[in-house]
Amino acid sequence: MAKRTYICGLDAAIAVMGGKWKGLILFALGEGGPLRFGELRRSVPGISERILILQLREMEASSLVHREVYHQVPPKVEYSLTEFGSSLNAALAPLGEWGEEHMERIEAIP
Image (cartoon, rainbow, N blue to C red):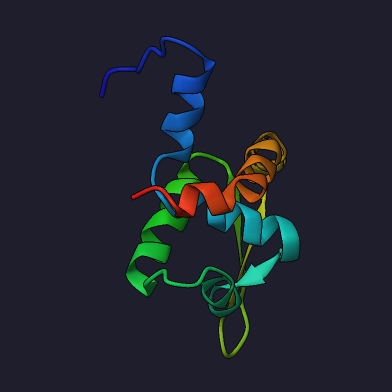
């Protein structure tokens, strides 16, 4: 696969973030991480198990999330933010604050 070239920093950031769920997963891990799969699923209301698995795999491949497997019975897996993921989470914080400030107006849009 050819290496992608981005036109600007926002283009690169959106490529890593892509989709509805990754920002919410980042937020959940930033607030409560490391989290087990079930804890993470409960922290992101509305996400299906299948989508969470797919998003976590993509985020792990992008080095946003670290997956730690504990070899025990029953098996235990925890997800946490990498330093790269934490830096993206910090960059998204002002956007979240903007959304909180304007939520009523946004919800009123037909």
